[in-house]
Amino acid sequence: MKIAVLGGTGSLGKGLVLRLASLGYDVIVGSRDEKKANSKAEEYGRILGTDIRGADNRNAAKMCDMAIITIPWKHAFDTAESLKDVLAGKIVVSPVVPMEKTDKGFVYVSLPEGSAAERLASILKESRIVSAYHNIPAKKFADLNAEFEWDVAVCGDDEDAKEVVMGITNEIKGLRALDAGGLSNSRIVESLTPLLINIAVNNGMRDLGVKFV
Image (cartoon, rainbow, N blue to C red; front, side, top):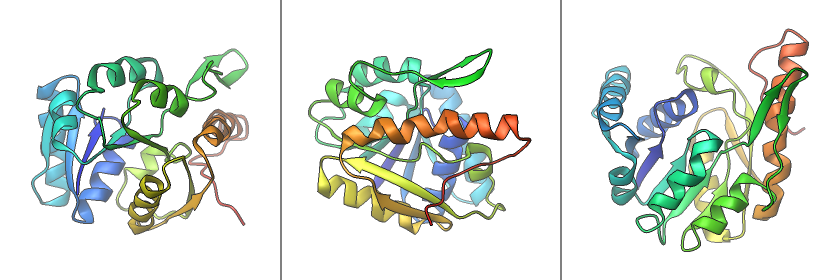
C-alpha cells in the first residue's frame, strides 16, 4: 500500500513516515514545497537506511492509496479542496485538531460541521474519511528510540476504511487502535488534544497520551 503523509514535514508527519516506512509501507512525504518534501524524505531515509520519496502534496496524493493529512487545521481544508479530485475514492485519514491558544491555555475550536473530520468529509465527498492519531504526543512519536503505550481512537462511517486504518495502526509498536464509532464522534476525540496539552503545561508533565483501562 502506498501511503502519502501530506504535510509530512512536521513532528506527527515525521513519526508516521518513519514508523510506517519501517513496517515496509511505501510512504511518500508530501509538502506544499517539493524541495522541502524531498529534503525531509532524504532525512527520514537516512534515519531508516532506506529510500523514501518526497513530492508536493498534489503529486503525493495522486500516487497514494491512502492519504494522512498532517497539516495545521487552518490550512488543511483549503489543501483538501485543492486535492479532492486526486483523493476521490481513496482513504483519507484526519488527525486534524482545530484549536487555538488563549491567555488561559489551548481551547478547542468548534466548527459548524461538528469536527475537522466532518468538515473534511463535506469537502472530500468522494473520499473515504477516517479520523485517527489526534492525541499522540508528536515529538516522542517521532523518536524511534522512545517507548510508549498509547491508544488511538479511530472514527469513521465507512467500516471497511476504518478497519484498514485500525489494522495499520495496530502494526505500530506501542499503539492500540480502538473503534470509537462514527465520524461524528471525532469532535470528542479532537477536543481531547487541547485538554492534554493544558494538563501537561499546567502540571509540569510531558508527552501525555491516552490509554483506556
